[in-house]
Image (cartoon, rainbow, N blue to C red; front, side):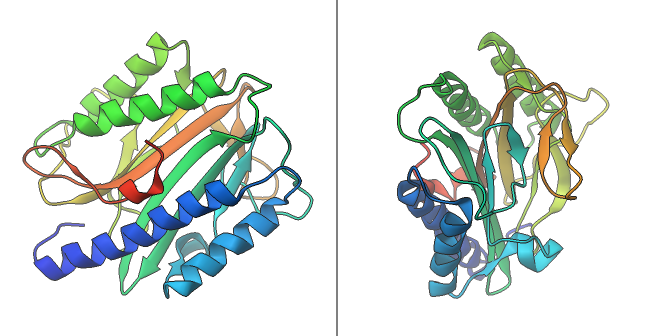
Length: 253
C-alpha cells in the first residue's frame, strides 16, 4: 500500500509489531516432541491477545492460524497433531495477520535443537540474502534487480531459488501490487519500488529445487526436485534511502 498519512504508518507499525512478536515467540516456544498444531494454537492465542486476525484464515480459509512447514515442505504447511517436531528439523513459521484494517506478513526458517542434518548453512544463507536484498531497496530501484541479487547470492552460496514463490505488496490486504517480487530477474519487468509503499520481501532459498508444487491437500507446497528450502521474510516501508523494517521485532537477524 501507499502510505499517505501518519495514521496509516501507525497502523502498519502496530500490525507489523504484532506479527513480528508472534513469530519470535512461536520460534522460541517450539520444542522437540511438540506437534505443529500445538505450536500453531500458541501463535493463534498471541494474535487474539492483540485483537489481530489470522491473515491466511481470513483471506483464504487456510486451516490454521499460521503456516508451519517442516523439512521437505517448502511453504503453506498445515498445522497438524500428526506432525511432531524432532531434533534437527528444518522448521519454517510464516505469520501474517490483520489489525484495524492493516495487514502485515513475516516468516522465518530455523533448525530445531542440534543441527544434526546440516541445515544451518541453508538457513544462514537465506537470512543473509534477505538482509542484502532489503538493504538494496529504495524508491526507484527495479524489482527485477533485487531478484537478480537474490538469485546471484544464492548461487554464490551453492544454492538455488524457488521461482514461483515471491514477495508482494501488503497493507490494506495480504497480497497487493506489486504482486511478484521474485527471487530471480525477469528482464522484461521494468517495475520499480515506489517510495512510501509497504511490501513484504521474502527469500526462498533451496538445496535442489527451483519450483514449488502443490500436494493433493490443495495447500502444502514441496520442491519439484526434492531437497530443502529456507524462507525468511520482512514487511518493510520503502523510502528514498534505507528502508524501514516494520517487522524487525521477529528477531530473525
